[in-house]
Image (tube, rainbow, N blue to C red; front, side, top):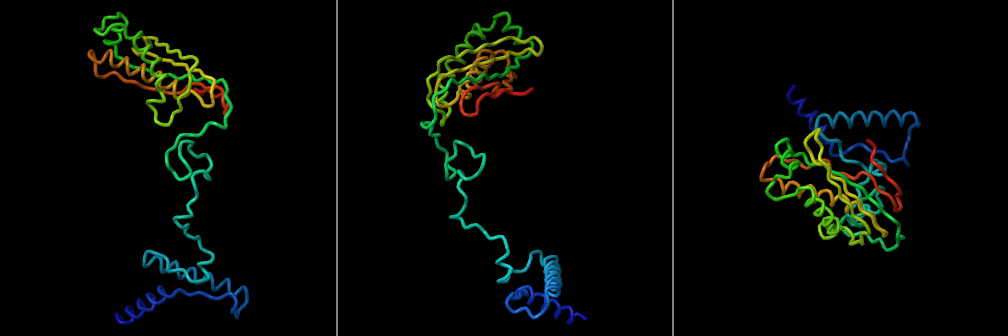
Length: 240
């Protein structure tokens, strides 16, 4: 019995190394028989895969119908992929976008964020009793400066001329926070979304810096774009 099992395994191993293939030019049986034989071969190969954990090697005819492996030097370029990232070049490397073919248009962007202070710090800010002084006024100026420095902070941002920057900070008694909104405008070849978001982010960081002596639990949250206009993509607004 043991010798029979060993013999069977030897045959299976041999078949696994030499998979059955049939040349289409030498078929001596009907189409129906060929279909039946093909199904038997497929079923047998499946059994071999169950036993050995992988399918048998492809024969010549199977190889013609299999999914070929793309050579490394034939990998599709990033530029051929729909919805690609604009700051990624044709070979997957970071690069600044060439906006020279674009037309100058009026562009605006509005962003927002929230700084959660906690009741104790919120009361101090409301009463203007923090050691560093007027939190909201300092943070507003910082946000405007931040917007103008965006291209120096974000590596692949274009250095554009801003025609308008506005930063507004308001205290919210509901959750003891500071709500920050920033708007940036320009007439240029590229948008000002990053300038608007940088403005509110820097303003939020300044609020933290002004208040950190009173609490380390302050949170800067929900930095996001709210609205943009102009450019090829036109107008966009966040849906709540």
